[in-house]
Length: 272
Image (cartoon, rainbow, N blue to C red; front, top):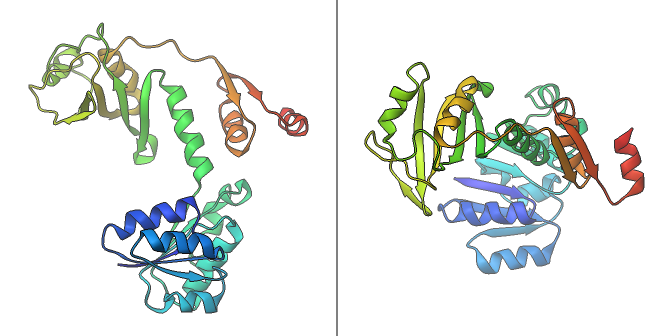
C-alpha cells in the first residue's frame, strides 16, 4: 500500500517506522528537514520537505496515486485542509486526520463527512486518553478497559489475586460460578508470557486475565478473579492541561475532584 504521512514528529515518525516494517511504500512530509533526514537514515522511506497542505507539496510527495493519507502534523487546521485537498484534487481513497482542539472534536459528527471536511477516520488523542482513564475509574482494580458495540460490551484486563473464587480453578468453572452471566476469557498473561485460554486452563494467582462481557456484568466477573476494590470517590488530578481539564469535566458529576496546576491563571479558569 502506498501511504503518505504528513508530519514527522513523534507520532508521524512512529507510524512511518511501523508501517515501513510491513512492506508499505511510505512517504513522509514535514517542514523540518533535519527530522526528515534523521528518519531517512533509519528507515527505508521517502521524505519530502514542504508545507503539508500545499497542493504542490502533496503532488511532489506522490498524492496522485496514493492509497492512504495520514495527517498528523501539530496543526489541526493543516491536517484538515490537507485532507480536503487530498479529496478534491487527488481523490485519495482513505484519509486519516488527527484533531486535538476540543472545539473541533465536540462537533466531529457535523464537520467530518464527505460534503464538508472529507475525513474517513478522526483521531483525537486527548479524548482517547480521557475516555480510557474514565473507564478505569468506573472499574476499580482493572488494568485495562476497552469498549465494543458502543460501550454495551467491554474487554477488561484484571490481575487475578488469591481470594478470588476462580483463582486456582479452571476457566470452564466460570459457568458454574455464574450460570446467568455470559463471559469469555480472551487472553491470559502469566509472568509476561501469553497463555492460550482453554476450558481446562487453570487461573493462577498473579495471572493477568482479559475477559469479555456485557457492561453490566463486568464487576461480577471481576469479583471472581479478585476482591472488588472499593469504588473511587475522591480523585486528584495532577496537571490542568488539555487532558487534565477534559478528565475533570468528564468525571466531576461522579467523583469529588481536586486538580493541581502550576499556573494560577489556568487554575482560576478551570475553577470557574
